[in-house]
Length: 376
Image 1 (tube, helix red, strand yellow):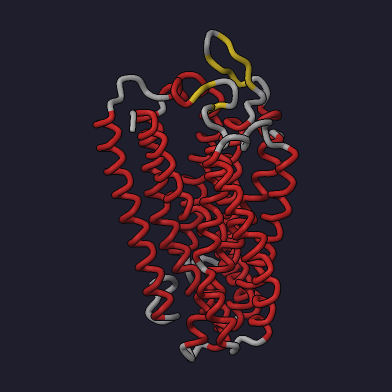
Image 2 (cartoon, one colour):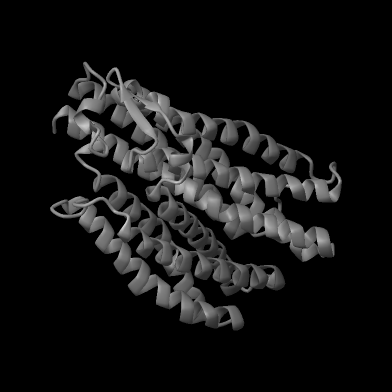
């Protein structure tokens, strides 16, 4: 591989690993907020248990996901300085807003929610977790503004060999954003709902003592996953009228990502969720349906990565569509040895974090709602 292919592969692998954390964080946040709200309204211990249990999983995934985001920032500075030089004034604006929202507001409200348990007034505590949800989705919004600009560079003019922001409204109303943002949100809700449904099914199969907690969680998870995949499929089809001409023609990687995303999402997961998911939500002791939901857990993550592949690989050889090629966006002076070394370091860190995240979440699921640090 030459240095360009190594840099592209590095970004693809690290970006995919980071997105695994993001899609679960976005999917779990509203579910935890809904559970917390129901606890505040009813005062029932079962909703407190649900909030603490799923909130603990959310906090673990969020904390480790933040670190993976930092690795992505390092990669931009190392390998793609040409992008910053040419379009930093435009591309960097939504990224700066995302940083302010994610690292300041979202983290602040999450900290207040974690450490304000039984210290803050009840409804102020609930407001904190809803602010976490709001800022998390605002963060996704700004990221998708930046990504959509790469797909369809609107709202910018070129002066002196650099792009300058001319119309922020055009960025926000970018056709590449209008269809893609609901698609990402749908994928996140599908992922969060499937994880909740599968973990609840696992506990019910083990004949847990917390039957009501996990039965309610199972139903919430199934409904959320069904809504999520419906939104993802509908918004995905809506995007076909907005795709750049020639994006998938002759591009094997993008075509494979698109083909398998449609196959797994619409032909496998969508009908199974509609039929088997509805059955298990009514009859939570149906072991065969529980086993099916557990087995389907990896599919939302796989589908999300395939969708990301289709969107990003289809843009090649352009980093900014018809404005800046990937080759011109690379940092000058990079050697294969430098990229290989950073590739090994980045993938090693992200891979380790992914394994740690998986192990901790699995342990929490197996242990159930006992000895939880959150809210103790």
